[in-house]
Figure 1: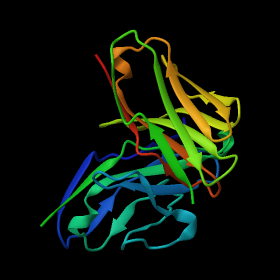
Figure 2: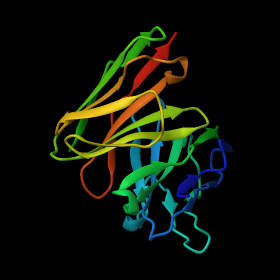
Figure 3: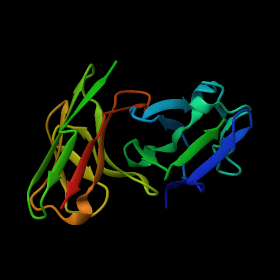
Figure 4: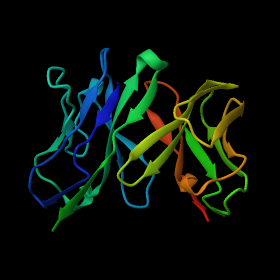
Length: 110
Length: 111
């Protein structure tokens, strides 16, 4: 079955510590993956996409096809990074719809 | 850029009553439209997906239905609400590059 798995519901770190939010996927084709973020009282929005190979707000994510993973990383967490993070996968073999993981709540403590 | 309007923002309905949540999109044409339900611990569950007027794909069996009467209008409905329909419903639009723009959401409480 095609799915996105985020094993951690909650990740709590201290300010300045490295952070890694895990995402694993199951997909038979060539994957296209995204990270979306929802800050408190704001709309869900795109953070980054793997094909852009960009760093947004200090976050990066590398697609590892061997491990079927797309983990989100930041070397030094900031309090303003506290939010809900969702990993998403495009299902091209089903018309291009997006499915999401369960989400991980990141809490960065001062 | 796209703008998604969702209403109502909050809704409290008795069990057995009908439901209509509306979503309209500005700033694009012929978008792919989505209804998701967001629940704590269960993430974003895709409910319906539409690639054009009158074209609706239902993702999970449920008490809900969706319609797309116009290119940029997407409606989530139910004839008789169940307690389990309570939740936070998000409309999203994708208009290229598979990047979604989300609405502010509609919180439904069924009593």
